[in-house]
Length: 149
Image (tube, rainbow, N blue to C red; front, side, top):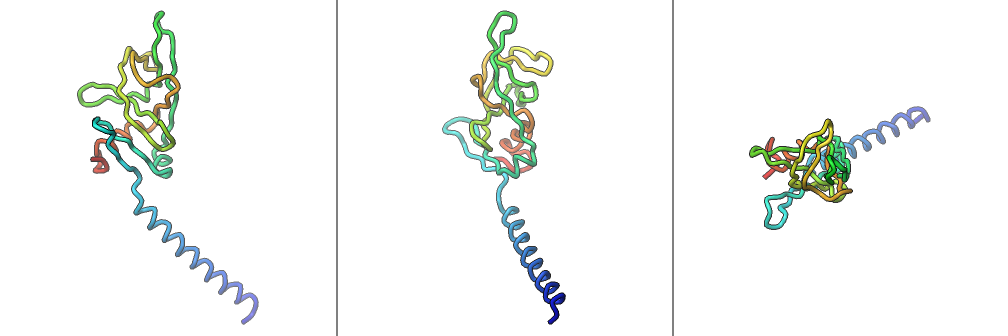
């Protein structure tokens, strides 16, 4: 066997092995659930744990709850994009207590001021809330598309 032919055959074998490994990884990834849902104690809340790939696909982005003074009163402030309404008009935000973990928290709106929501009550200052991807987390938690419970 000439050297060129040996290199070609060896390369073909290596490529085949690499593609087989990629296929196995893709099959394993397809079997992995993008979200794990766990009930939180005796509440109606669900802890959502996403895979890193799922969070990347949803482009999850967060911001922190900030204290602000509005009209002489102390309020909490979150980006307007973090607010989620339920069918009964209740208002919520998804917190991110750990990387890739999301938990819905009830919020009480004072008002919307441009791109900020001012809250009477909500998560503590410094808490991360989901700004991009909150609607998708709601859908995951509540079974929109068949992924929730």
